[in-house]
Length: 333
Image (tube, rainbow, N blue to C red; front, side):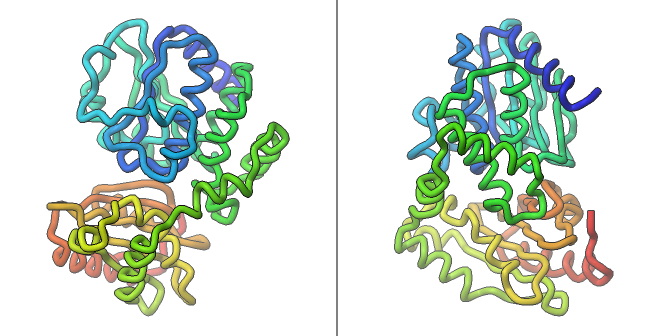
């Protein structure tokens, strides 16, 4: 099935359901929230009964400017009232059920579970699956879906889609940037999106305390694997001392691969009894294999995992894995 026919079929499927319930992944990023916001706007414009949310609260700065952010809800588990035959539960930008609201993994019958994503390691869960790992972002897919369904491109939806694309492809600097991402962005600008205004909303909201947090992480940067891997860490105490949230680290892992000679960056963040590890890579280097070895996943150049270890044990494990995996040439896919 071609991309165009697959999207047209998906649009027809969505049109059948009067109720849309949209879910994003844990610690939602700009792609999940931007795309989700746009999909809510389109659903409401089509006369659907729409609500949306995810396992974690909506993260700043997106809560301040994305349309429908005030309607977003954090759910500890799948609401039972969603399990109706007139309902499509649409999970976006989520590679596996374990990354979304608890209960998805058990099935949603009599509702229909629709999986829309661009992660190459998506487990293809759900009743209806559309995964395009060549897309720069799930928001890029959602724009193409809207065109296939002939949904009206309101400015609120355009802002959401643009936010999703630029954040997931590093403002068109990451290797996952596609020609289609540029074409979609050009169309969004024609429709009224203002890049400078959105850049300020996305990237110019740091507090002094957040800068101090980044300073702590910078001061701990260490190199491994002959200088090809950079890692750093932040503890619970760091966040408590400065009074900032864990969303303040968004973008920090990307800075590690800007160190001269570094191809892989890793940020370890203590979260209670767990440690979240964010991986980034540049060039042809892939970090997906390493993330998968540790129970996570993601893209070749942006992945993550969660370790049920103390921070010190997690650091030791990461060092062992790096030496094991990168004793040979870096993976490239």
